[in-house]
Length: 159
Image (tube, rainbow, N blue to C red):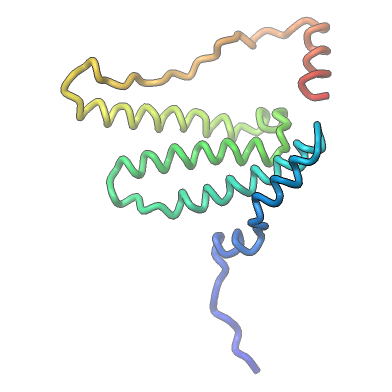
């Protein structure tokens, strides 16, 4: 009788085992489609490509310097945003209602500001400072739109 394997599958092992890595072939097949069918084909591909990016990013050696850690954090947040959106097939309703993507957007801005802060400490000319980002909305969406506007957006945004 063969002894049981002591190897425990890590998340990278599970990821590699579950991934169809023929990204270009999948992309070419999706490109033959049109409209909603094309998007339905492309979003899972985008999700898988981003999972691979995530695997690569998390494999980076961040002990090189602190800048590497900040850069990896930004890529991690950006990947999380892409994964969150692509996992829902581009339907923004569950993305907006869940809050995870919102958290990652805020974290992305925080990481940018951390990098700008650290860079600015090294600069000896204030004209070369990198400005910090602020989270602002360019459109006030705190008021309920009229029925005609809501109906139009429901039809064309989610239809």
